[in-house]
Amino acid sequence: MQVTETQNEGLKRGYQFTLPAADLAATVDAKLKEAQPEVEMKGFRKGKVPMAMLKKQFGQRILGDAMQEAIDGALKNHLETSGDRPATQPKVEMQNGETWKEGDDVVVNVSYEALPAIPEVDLTSLTLEKLTVPAEEAAINEALENLAKSAQSFEDRKKGSKAKDGDQVVIDFKGFVDGEAFEGGAGEDYPLVLGSNSFIPGFEDQLVGAKADDDVTVTVTFPTEYGAPHLAGKEATFECKVKAVKAPKAAELDDELAKKFGAEDLEGLKKQIAGRLEQEYAGAARAILKRSLLDQLDEKVKFDLPESLVEAEAHQIAHQLWHEENPEVHDHNHGSIEPTDEHKKLAERRVRLGLLLAEIGQKAEVTVTDQEMTQAVLRAARQYPGQERAFFEFVQQNQAVQQQLRAPIFEDKVVDHIAEQAQLSEKTVTKEELEKAVEALDEL
Image 1 (cartoon, rainbow, N blue to C red):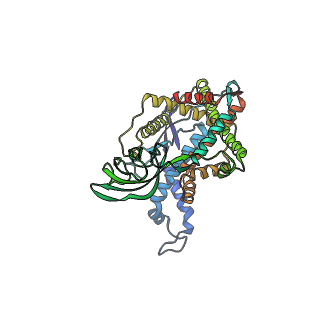
Image 2: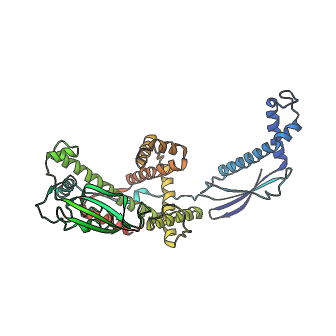
Image 3: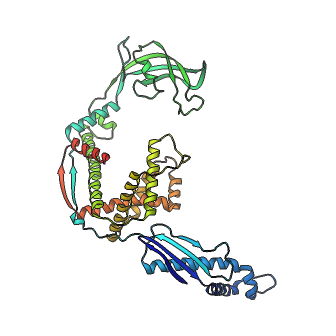
């Protein structure tokens, strides 16, 4: 096998592999000779089929296999010898493939972008600040009040009282479109909290001010994206009978409330809330620390980037942002989305940091354990209630999905490793200061 370099510019590499026809023919003959003792064919005893007949019967298939093996082997040897690590799958094209015939040399052109050499970075030169926020009494009390509201009950208002926003009205209703009642448009003794936005937009507003025993006609228009196509965008009227108007009553902040949320008593519930709040604060503080770490690495370390990786990442960013701006589109049946300069700049940062973190992690022998992967799969499976088993099987059979689940775990572990090497200080801040720091992340 002869290997000739055809391109070496930046990270771009090109090579021409030439497999002599004589070597290929010898490989085919050797494979046929090796298989001959086991071959049976009508008219011949086992192992006595002439080589000429074997070549006629199996030669083309074995020739194809031999070509593929030779090319794969040559590429593998080249990469091991050169030390190159292709950024993406190498492009392999057979020269004059349409006109090639048996007896000709096989000439293959191979091209790829090599991953760059990643420079060393002094992790001890990084300076990081870890923010800590204690769960203050005011935040705990606010959370308690929200829990009490979620566990609220409703009591009848004084007879003749008008319904207010936040009140519960108990109604019978029946809906009509074009004068005809429609399926699913009726209900009895339905408890509707005004302002909950649980009914069609505009429905609840028209019940504000109603009193018990009032008859109210509500006129609304179904949203154009309504789930039932035969109702979408149509005007409807609802004949409503208000049977009761009830005022909200927050639950008492006592041991009984605590038991509803799995605590032994109110003090136990407060401790649970404090723990949850501090966990939330710690997550936000980690995001701030991680951003600072990545910003410093991005500033300190520069190297050439494979254009193919940057281009693919820029298209992915552009596509993701487009769908965020167009949430009504759930498929990919839309026009081409071209990345902007801003998308490309962000892509360069992501690719650079991704390669750098991978290099640091590899040198530090950071790995993702089977237990960590199992936990990641379990978390992801919760998004598909009732289909967990099918999801597990899907993940087991899909290497790409496994990598998607493994990548963020690996990255977080590498970030932890870097933080351990960096100069780390701690600072206690208030909840408001933490929130401002998180808002600043979104502005960058």
